Length: 143
Image 1: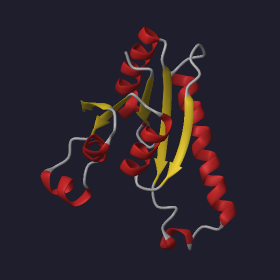
Image 2: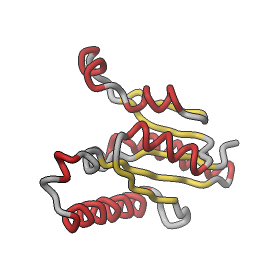
Image 3: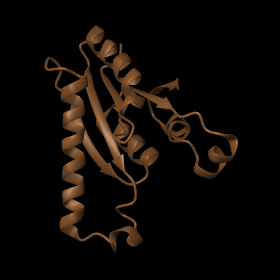
Image 4: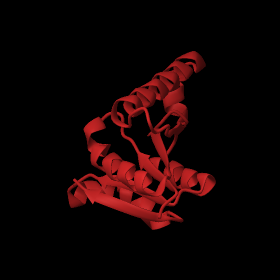
């Protein structure tokens, strides 16, 4: 039913996205679909953050994160599926939705953190903002 399925991956909390990945793998295996895994690095575009990192350090961090995403895919996806892997920088909900539109994603499967109302108000929710603005179906799994 869904040709392209996206799972955003938080590499700082690998276990968090595993249930979403399992559902995505089931979905693409049933429909011979395409799996997309992305991760978003916050803050590198911020001038304050970039003042502490030179360009070579910045490239090294991005390269390291890309390798971590590759390792994640190798460990949890398996060899029979070749996912599309992408690393972006910026606001997670904005980058996820931008990628959804650009890549023609049909379904996003992601987990939602359980936060207090105060944290939700102050920090916002990545999953809520993706659902709000996505141009495709979004399945949000409660943690």
